[in-house]
Length: 470
Image 1 (cartoon, rainbow, N blue to C red):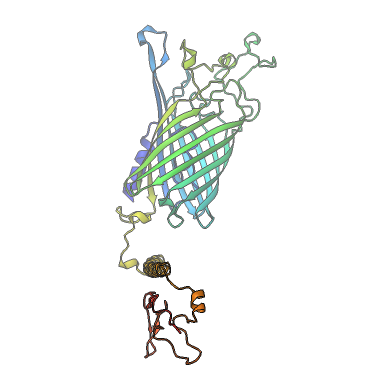
Image 2 (tube, rainbow, N blue to C red; image 1 turned 30 degrees about the vertical axis):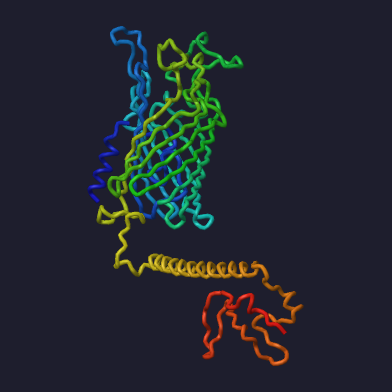
């Protein structure tokens, strides 16, 4: 237990800078897409992830002593701790930091840029436990400089989100160990009306920019509330030691940020990643975000420059290189489980590594599985017996067809015209059966001792013996 706590403190305190947006919980997620199923009650988990984007000569400079340019870096770190209070309720706390905010007045938002609270009610089963649904509420409060270039839009005000999540699992008995499909939809409100995004204000009327209606901007304050629709879909494929996942997620503004804000664009990302478990309580999460939509820069720098919001990269003569979102992000994260403490690190609480022994032989679930296995074996034997009997019947029917198809084989009409009786019948005069009436029915014959004998369905008579002349 102490070893896990020390590891958690080291990871939370020692990272320099998460993936872009939409990482809300430490568990019950892929990377950005949430799952509808929670871990077991009493699970305490922590997650730290760092997102990195870099570009050589990202900031061309006019200073010849510094070469042709300086390296561009975007690094952000998010740390989350969550606890499963009940089987249907998870509560999480998070904080994040930007290493570089690309401002002249501030280099970084460290040690803490944002703090967040997440409450998730989930694990509500539907459709015979193949589907799980839930609701999640989020609160994020920036503490330092916002309107950060290359980062999702934020005005420094509290931000509220409400999301619905649903997951389908192929195995309803062990859902977390089976293939899953996940979908999220949500509403996000930035509560940014009246927030000032600029680094400075212009007081001289001659320097004030105007909007499309001719009104002058005196400050870079937000006029209205920015609202957005957020979404995500994903698929996960777990194995014993490695889980793969694929996500598509994004943001679509219902009411856009002001024209002088960074990252006013609707965006969509695709994320491909995997999770490796070197030890039972520790998981390494590695993924790659690729920007699908949102490459165009819609910030109005004619207005933004008046308030110290500059086009990035600064002094770059090629304006086509300007961007508001990085084209990719490399995400490296670590997740570890602090509780439940099982007392033995070699054990894990999923069915893939459960050691079934005689001590838990009275478990009703194990007994049910044994009964099902025994029933399956008996069913297979019965099916094989039925298959053999059917093959015998089909063979006998083929033999009968061949006999009836032979030339000269009598029919019922010829028997009646010749005054003959069908094999096995009794003559009206004597009531005795003919010598040829020794056919063997398909269901067996009765011996003098009165016992039933199972014999194949084969005719005991030939066409020549089946009739008798008068």
